[in-house]
Length: 596
Image 1 (tube, one colour):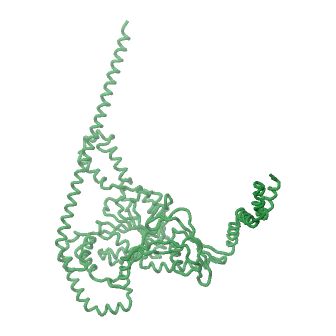
Image 2: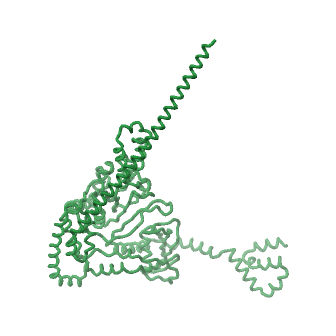
Image 3: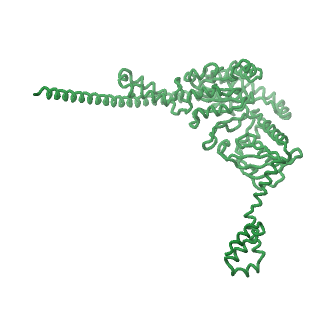
């Protein structure tokens, strides 16, 4: 084999690469020479393919274009974990692009995407939204991976989507993180910024009637914790919350003053941390969370909902999440009493473990346990057993996250609880909680309001002229109906005992008869009797369950105490035996010493 010729052929460039297949075949298979002479173009084609494979001109052109475009093209990137990503992709799907839609992503538009506004019952938009909610999910198409071209303000834009590293949480599922790149000719990013601002304003205008709710997620398979947009709900008016007018106005005025710019300047000039905390406490179903959402709607705040019972949430995650809060936002900590934090700053699990070690039945308190009553010991552990789940977040971690050195400022903090007496004093002290609002079960007056809101149409502030004319024509007929409903509401309120049923209980009952107010009054005594019987039955079941727990724990304590006593007695017997053996040994030694 002519190795020198092979080296020269490989080193002479592209023309030699084209001839290389012919040379290799004639060198190793000399009999194939006539075939090459007969079909020279075929072997030349193989040579061209080999040269393209070796030189990779496409990659070289892409690299050259990338370097060149960085000089003449401006680009702005948007990650899929930002709200802007969904705004831009939705907008691009609605505008006309200069490239055929050859690659699209298909998703289902669930009914949750159709959110009706809270207007009058006969508002056309409400009826249309309700109709769409009952329809099957529709298929939605959006741009897939690749490049699209479109024109905005007589300027050519390029938009491309690429997969990135990691995952993001998209409402109800994990998705791979994507990057959206917006580019236009020129070295200035101002045209791109103007386009992004345009899309942002359009979508924010669409969301004026919605309250955005966000929840934390762990970044997808072990990533850092961050906030994800969970859903959006129609704005809730303050008049939909049944609460004493004085309390409602007090909280409303306090939040309004706190959100004022002059208040922020006052806090800054006096060296006071710009924070405000509210504690909503009361039995379940009295409207604590509803009032928080109504406040968020009133002041146009996004709601950041956080539960401390999330087993993936640690102290460091909590601090990181709170540091990501924007200035104008509402942080909602629901059912803070269920987190299992006691007055010692330990979780219920740690408290229960210490009680077992140091309590009447524990190894460290075996002797003292005989001086205490077993029933009292069981009573102490019953309260602990009520919380089956505990939080990984400690009290000190929560306090540092709320108002520590690195705690955020400018947001509104609202905590809700059913058991305010069980909260640690440090958690609800002045400075962390500024305003406490107590919620109670519905009074007679509030029961009347609930009844009226169920059967009287809400006033519409954005109805069209045609609808307003139609409402004026029917006003005389409706006035008599409203008078009748007010009489029924007074009758309904008179039948409801003060502070016996929660607003949620009354609303659920009225929903059963939402089309017949008279029947709701007629069947109310029967429903109240059944509700009281059901409440009594549940209380009896809880009492039986508590007694069974007491007996089981008492038996467990007795067995443990007997085992400890047996172990102590065995230890004492072994000690006595050892002492006896030692005494006998010493006696024998003395006898042997005295013997001649």
